[in-house]
Image 1 (cartoon, rainbow, N blue to C red):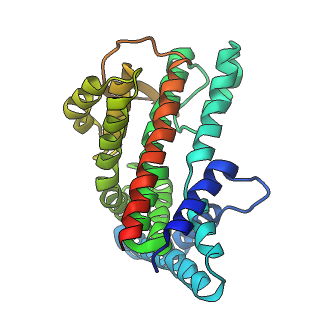
Image 2: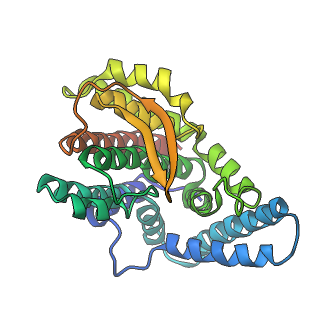
Length: 309
């Protein structure tokens, strides 16, 4: 079931206008609860962990897609399609969470900024300085510009809200199971591989969209964005996250990556971009330009493609 230009436009507009209201239960929370339940069920089968993980992945993906498909058969159009598009996009909420970090940084309140950034990143935040807090924020927004905006819209174009829901289920399971530790190395193998597949094109598409915006926005650097993407993106452990991050780093003229700590364990990722500007809270305004203009650009392209279907 595909969408109309009106449904797509209204869904994106609703996300930009309202974000994720706290009073409205979010479907991704339900996907997470289902994934946790399926993990318990499939682990209890005593199958090999990789097989159990595949079973859990299939269960959650099919249940999520099935629910969205059934809702569109039973509930009136165009409202339900608009609701799913709104729910599965994260433009406004991504900016809201980032601004919750930037606002205390502007006031010099490092302690509050550490608490706020700790809600959107997995790394240890208790000892981060302004530079490191800003880096964590920019990296998260750049990566989620792909995962939370461009990828859902890409899969919406491929298969309507059902495919969009399937992508969000894949992405949620990767965030829950896709760890390379003793508990999830085997069980989360399928979730991690499928997330890599689902994001391969969107991540590179996001980088190209960032280049396009950098080409016309005076304060952004197209040359550095292309250069950073070409030289640095593939050096990240993830086959995908380096592309939007490197493109954003180059466009902003900053350097991302480097040392982080996760539960006290040191992790060092490849550096992305060049240190042409200080990495402080003011840099987020450039990232904000990228977030909203890339979203607008791909929405317009999507509307044109939907109109041709």
